[in-house]
Image 1 (cartoon, rainbow, N blue to C red):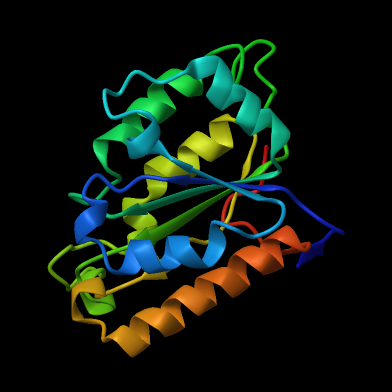
Image 2 (cartoon, rainbow, N blue to C red; image 1 turned 180 degrees about the vertical axis):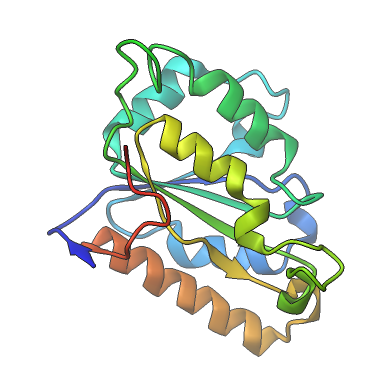
Amino acid sequence: MHTQTSHSVLILYAHPRQHLSRINAALRAQVENLDNVTLCDLYEQYPDFLINIPREQALLREHDIIVLQHPIYWYSAPALVKEWLDVVLEYGFAYGQNGTALHGKYLLQAVSSGGRDYAFQSTGSSRYSLVELLRPFEQTAHLCGMHYLPPFWVAGAHYLSAEAIATQAERYREHICALRDGTIPAPLCPAS
């Protein structure tokens, strides 16, 4: 386990139907007002998908840990996350010649799924583990010279009681606070 005094955390929150969300709304509520944590609601900022690239790149430069918080949509992230990755992580900024802005930073995905954990295995309905489904994000982190952290995952979100949602939200808060305060777990993919 790697430790350091304090990290700045950027949470890129992306839920296209957040008015229907129980778990992501609860997770968000637990972290959006924490010190040294910046939360950006991508669907609120960019309902037209026209992303302010310089603004987003500046935010990335200012933070040590980047969190993509989103529900699992069709075995991946919602469309705006993909658009954000496509336009913000451009050549010369995030990778390629002189593209070192993200080197040494950490990437965490905080995800929720309607499916329960047993659905995410070779014998389950999803046929793949969550880690396997998130491999493109791990590879993105690798290309950008980032450390890819094990995902924070809330499975079976549709089936959770109000008490279970509160427990998961508190677990998320503790996880983000631990990262912010310097407790970094071993990455799944260390920076290259």
